[in-house]
Image (cartoon, rainbow, N blue to C red):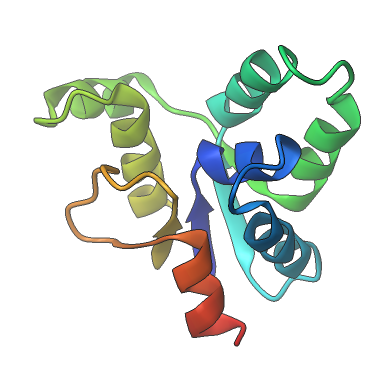
Length: 133
């Protein structure tokens, strides 16, 4: 199963936020190739920018993500299409379009306002309850 993972899932793990255990289980399942995890290339940059304010060395964590997930980059036309979506969160729009282009079946996010027109959105807890219970 192809799953698209929102940036906040990784931040939950590295910053030990509320759903860090779920994020760890999800990442482990992707490492074990139970699921194929996709992310947008800016996810790595966003994690680095946000997490290094609280954690001094996150390069090992970023390397694990790099080795574990399939990382995709946005094109000019994808950015144009993301800007045309009637939703103010450009990052979510890009992630949605990349999930669609990558034929992902689910977007995993703990963002209650994540945009998706036709791909199922599940929180990390909902995803684990459904697919790893």
